[in-house]
Image (tube, helix red, strand yellow):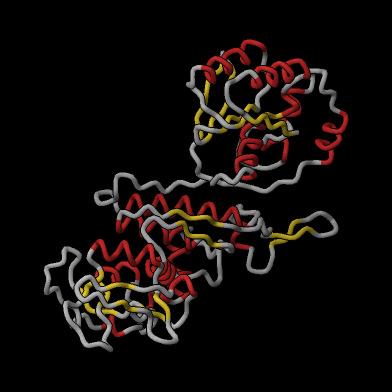
Length: 394
């Protein structure tokens, strides 16, 4: 920890700077490049300053010129020949926003012990069941997040386990009104094994979870988040920020079944009989997972991830003569559902022609379109007065 964080007595505000207390600081650094080795001219004395020998300016020329205009640089009206003619202000508020002074995390505080974490999950979350033998202490994770992130950061935990990280993020948001988000990653590790005779046997350490109905670790993770959110809302009913959420979306990575792949290989793009079947093959039920997602929802979520969109990207439903399309970022249109016809092409072209829609790309699920519909759409998009990419996926 630097002395700047421990002692602010060196800072003052003799010129009533609206940014608050500051102290003189050296704008040079030991490392850099030729691009940070330029002259700075003192407007009072005309002296040209270069970085000291063996050092470089710590900031780009653009940044330093910007800070000179803003008054963060202070030029001396007179100085000795071998003395630098300026210095940079280092503000207390910069230190406090970029560096949070970390106190002792362990000491004698039982809040940071695994025993406390185990008791919290057993007594407050799962009401008497020891689901995990060594969960991470909630207060410890809260401290780590508080000291290493901002109030709107996204916190990623690749090994979610009992989802303590998600609980900590929600608790911090409830305490300070932050808008942190979390991404929890957890393999569906079973809480049981299956004997040769087909009998299920709980794994070592997994009996309590298995007996409680949890067949995999990720199920416990999700249930912890639900219960923790409910507890936070109940415990902070009068003080909880109005925009506190506490909800989450659950995504699974699922391989298509062998039967689905065979259907794709045998599919006749001229026909229509399998349109709905092909789409429904991607629904949660058909893929053998919980969640109730339709085939269109599964495909859209997969494509959004493929196209680089965040999981929480907002989408809009667009009506095209009774056909429901999905608009993302106002510039990409997804056509996934079957039922597209000439009237829908006409509706889309009308909205493009009048700039009600100004998309750069149209992405469609090829199995939902027959050859005639697809050709008509392709020809229509070519008549629009700007280039619109048509992306066909199967």
